[in-house]
Length: 97
Image 1 (cartoon, rainbow, N blue to C red):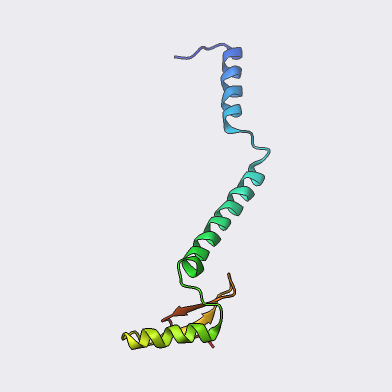
Image 2: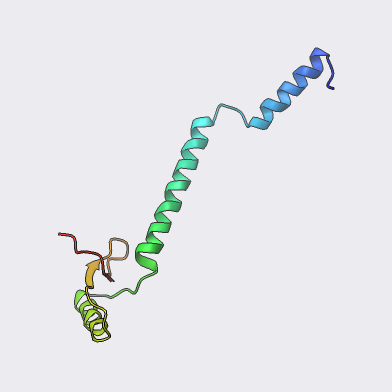
């Protein structure tokens, strides 16, 4: 059981408040956490949408790859310009208009 002295209790309260890191910077910490989470999400999207795919330097090169894939039985592909690398990638998703 802890001490009943006021000075001991004040010391415990001060230690507890110090362990919280202070409430002065709550919004700043939350903003930094939000920015870090946003950057992590953007990096994951970039890996999935660009870095894990073959990149073609021009549309005609990507279309040649589509024809090559069709020769092996893969159909329904089309090329799109990547917003991350400005190269061209292939997808089987429906074309956006």
